[in-house]
Length: 317
Ligand code: BTX
Image 1 (cartoon, rainbow, N blue to C red):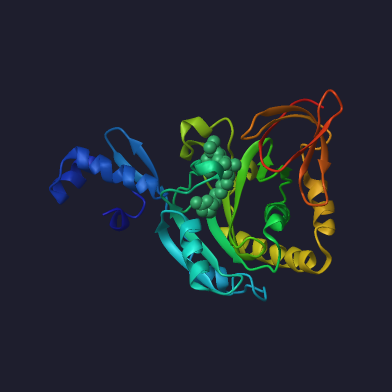
Image 2: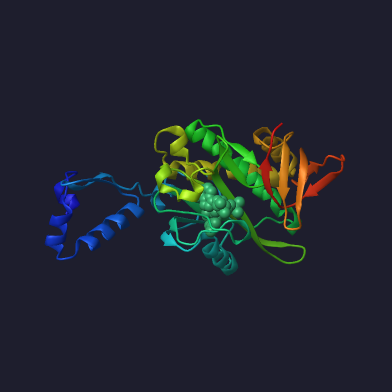
């Protein structure tokens, strides 16, 4: 009915009469459309009008014009999944080649670290998992989180002109608000990685109202910061290009060149921070990262602590 009326108002009464359903059912369907990314205007006595239709991406849009050698050469694309990580784990276990990418328009149970939830609404973000098979010991896998952060930051800069900051280890912030989350998981034996699965969640085209209330003060999207919509397929292609470039450098020359780039985007270094780890909370100055990507925190007694995993809160300089 909305297609036929071509952008004009359609009253709830008319929809309910024509479809033979209640006004409540109409309202529910309208809410479903909103969830799917349609922007609808509701005006009293006039009804509903579709303002914008969702901007979908497709397998073709991602692969056409992609210039990488291995990353994203095989793409597993889905409209809706529980979590791209879950699918990627199964594919990795089944033996798919390095560079295989799982992309979804929506995740119904996207996840962050420590089983936290990652909000991944339809048609608005980039929710994807990349499968790598580096010939490395498992202890090196966290370096790939930092490499991923650099690749995504460079891609955001190139596509939007925005200047993101990286907060150790896995957040990318714009104007101090979380725009990207990275989740690195692996399948490994004691001394050998079988596969690393890198989950990337990027808020691209959400408006502030499309975030749940509890994220309003801590999260943002590229379009909120830029003031215009961003082409998600182009962003994915650019991330894959940057990633491949850095990954080749990393495999050839080790972590050092990546570390330098990472430091150039890091927001926490030199600042007072609070690090919440599983075993307790530490406070002090962030000195930098080691050659392995481990965070060095110097406390007020000038003791340096090496932090492998934590949530970081940034204080003053
Ligand atoms: P994290 O544990 O650092 O962050 C999770 C926290 O971030 C949540 O507890 C919440 O406070 C906040 N949060 C949740 N959703 C969002 C959002 N959309 N934007 C900003 N903040 C949010 C970060 O974990 C790692 C996230 C990885 C997500 C990708 S998406 C593709 C792949 N599949 C999957 O299930 N996870 C990864």
